[in-house]
Image (cartoon, rainbow, N blue to C red; front, side, top):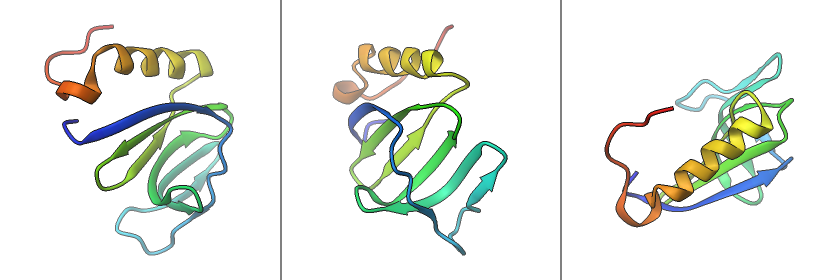
Length: 99
């Protein structure tokens, strides 16, 4: 977490296409998109989302992007708010998360 440059909450991004033969298995299964994907905005990035959920958290680190969401738009927004409030960008994350 010490390498996080920015966090963003976005709605319905263009995920692009999965990257075949990447070091991480990529693809689609039911409503799940996962693995290494590529689009014009982020280049190659790690994706872990449920496609039927609109909101996604985009984590930009010094070396890449990770896009993820949770079981609902509301829960994804709550995680984004929690991460933002924890000052992850300034100090890195350490400690224990409690629900």
